[in-house]
View (tube, one colour):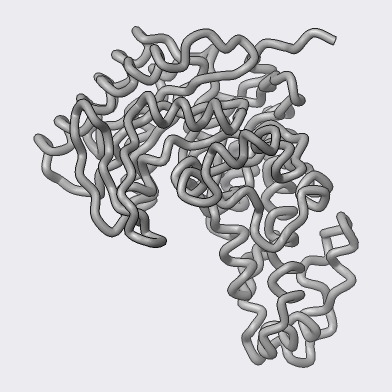
Length: 370
């Protein structure tokens, strides 16, 4: 059977909110979509089969972490990232730019050489140019590849953000050249520009000239307020290309997702559901629950009565409270899976309400509650 080219179609719209379908040769992805994060070739505390049972249709892998451990050559020898981690779902890999900024012990940015940094694991020096980032991602055999960009920390320094944005545009052109022709894969550009509307618009305009398969909004989830994030999205929502998917990187909480969908975003990833699950925080349709709280010691009701998937509601708050307060691994496994399942339930409800033309009502009901 011939492999399918990457494609995207908008099926329904409710003002700016969009319900669409991404087509890949590994399977289709209904949007708005949430991608569980598989940083180290694993979604922490979950098996891939359980991830699939939650309704997840795509996961995210991390170029920075995988290039350091175990290394792209080892993964290539195993047959690529999908075979290495036993995952049949489409995989999107980020370029590594954010991790260079946030994790490396020492980093330096060179216009031609790219990012020069020391590993956060053992201090070993690495060079990550746009070409090397693309080579690694293609070596991993990811289905959606991200361009190499610089992701600066939050700042009000206009000139610094402008310089960084222009460097990211230069690297975007080099990334596109390095990617070449891969009709069964997709290459996404990343819009930078900090909190400055004019820089965001210039970044998008120049990226469209290069022509990418999708457009991500980067440089957020770096300490800005939700109001600031929504302001950035409001500044570009009218000019984002209608025929391409819109991806908000590293976001976020359920209210972040609801607000971003309202402003035209189609794709999300975040460690929030897995990290929260490992620390005892559960997301439910009635708000968040800290399962370690003493109030749940004698509560024999499930975390969420509405959850019927994977038999997750057979575990009581009382039991989970016990697991967390005795540091049992099972507690983290159950709550992580519960949170990913909740996020996928949220995305399903979002898509349904966009299709029915009731998204604003749904948004207003849950934007503060979740």
